[in-house]
Length: 358
Image 1 (tube, rainbow, N blue to C red):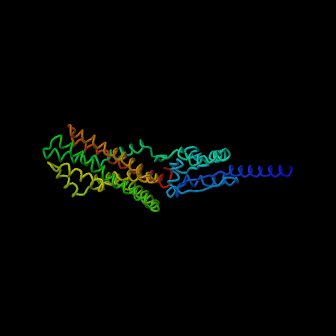
Image 2: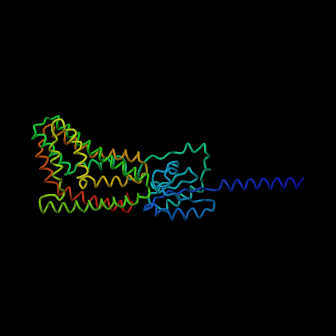
Image 3: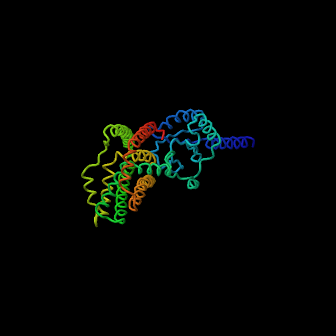
């Protein structure tokens, strides 16, 4: 009888020990991105903390190849650590303080809840497409700053003079401005969406495209600084609008005004990339890290709306009596300062993008 009780006691202890060992296992999923400075800073801390807990198992996931898993856990930015598929520690929680990260991770491992079952997984938060530094307001403001650009102001003054010289009405001016803005908006949307879509299908080329964009932003920043010097010395800009574009826009009258202005807007967005495209490249580089084509397209749309809004406002003012000559004179007086400030900002942004600070 005693032997039977001893056997049952040992069996019960074995079951309890097995269950405790199973319950004590903690899964730590670490999401990072290649080339991410914040991730490089967090990685050794995470490895040291997890290695100090025998029951903790660390799994590292590169975000571009494991986006579906990250989305399932509610992860929308890197670096991020998920403990037992429920506790999420993101960069915004410790803001670069590695000691705080170590404390938070240790506490999360020690107090980790059981891994949720299949029925509980539906209750986990799903991630939405966001970036830490690129909020909708920031992107919209960047678009507005790109819209208030000497190149765009010059073209608007030129378009107004075309309409006035051809005897066009106020309605013709509004139609021309609307068509021109629509051409810019559609072209930038198509190009941007195409790049984001390509990245989503071929994630391996993301790093190459990102590097090229950073180099382009830096190059355009240097070009803006050079142009400020060039304007001051020669009283003209090194950014030259092709005569073919000017001749083409000169045909914007009568029934073909909407078609010509739309095509002209599309051409302008390409031939004047050094003026507006630098900020666009900077925004696009940050959007690529989101890995969500739909969300990226929405942000691009918001940015492009910011770009065309100043043109629409200026076009309306020109249509209702603002003298195109005064607009052009203002642009001529301030273009050196605008080029200088724009160049410095672009170089600063290129450095921040290169070191993954933004």
